[in-house]
Length: 120
Image (cartoon, rainbow, N blue to C red; front, side, top):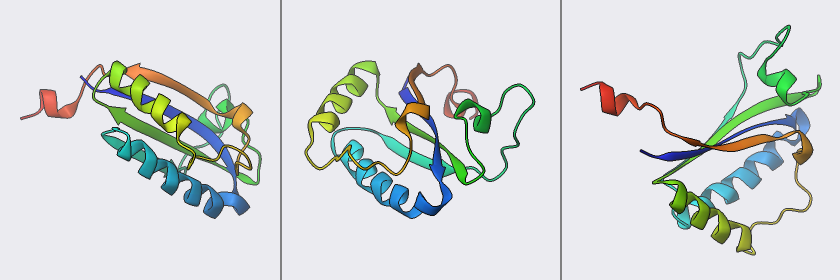
């Protein structure tokens, strides 16, 4: 089953184009180094919950939008190798990020279920 890295972060609305530029570069690098898929989504229908929610999780401010993203790999070993290559790639510039990385939530996940495995 595939291995997935998931991310949730808050991006200032006035920096969404800069974030898209960064994401486009990141996508190309991850795919070049062996990821199977790379997806970035901008929140449209994510209410601020009373106890939990995407906006609460990243402490999103009024002038920010939540981004939900994931990268798919063949397995954990491939993910570790791909991430090492990406982090060493000089084309990925970590300075001047258009978001607050301290409020980003991320982690690696094993796949529990895929539609392609249960629906024929």
